[in-house]
Image 1 (cartoon, rainbow, N blue to C red):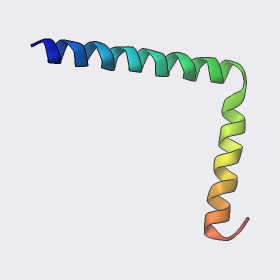
Image 2: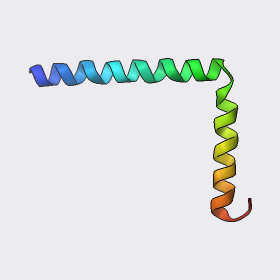
Image 3: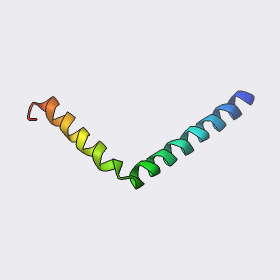
Length: 49
């Protein structure tokens, strides 16, 4: 029972942290930078870029 509770708490902490960091990144305008980099990487893999 303790391992389940600890894993549930740990998972919740990680989830809340991830959501908070995503929100911070979006409010700072970093989502567009990440999207642009992802597009460039995909185009290079295909051989277009």
